[in-house]
Image 1 (cartoon, helix red, strand yellow):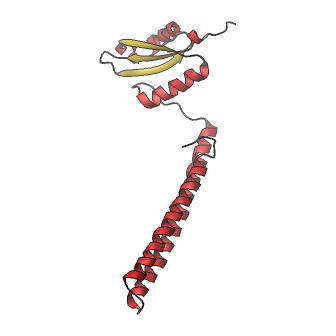
Image 2: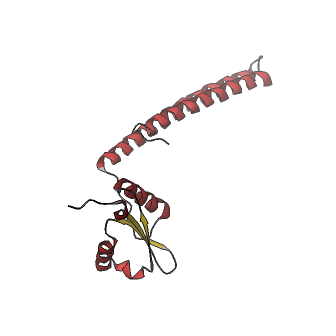
Length: 166
C-alpha cells in the first residue's frame, strides 16, 4: 500500500467551451478519474477545460468539493445527500423550530387580543384617551420585543443543538 501525499489530493473542475462549470469532483488519480468519466458520462465530450486544485488532505478535499458544488452549482453534479443521522437531526431541528414558532404565535395572538380589548375598553371609558392608549401600545410593543428575543434564543438553541452555529 502506498501512502498518499498532498499532491495526490486533487479537486477538479470541468468546464465547457463557454467556460460554464459542468462538474466538480475529487480524486487521488486525475488520469484514471477522467478516463472513467470519458467512458461513462455522456457530457464528457462537452469538456473543454480542466482546472486542478491540490489540497493538503482528504478532509480539506471533501470540504472544498462540498463548498464548490454548493456555491458554484455545476451543471452535472448531483448534490450529495445527507446521511440518515444528519437527515434525522435536521428534521428534529425543523420540528422544534416549527413548535417554537407556533407557540410564539399563539402567545402573540393572545397578547394582541388582550391589549386590543384593553385599548377598546379605554376608548369607551372615562379614563380613556391618547395617553392611556399609548401606554397600552407601549406595553404591547415591549411584550412583542421580549417574545421576539425569546423566540430568537430558542430558535438559535434548536439550530445549534447539533454543534454547528448559524
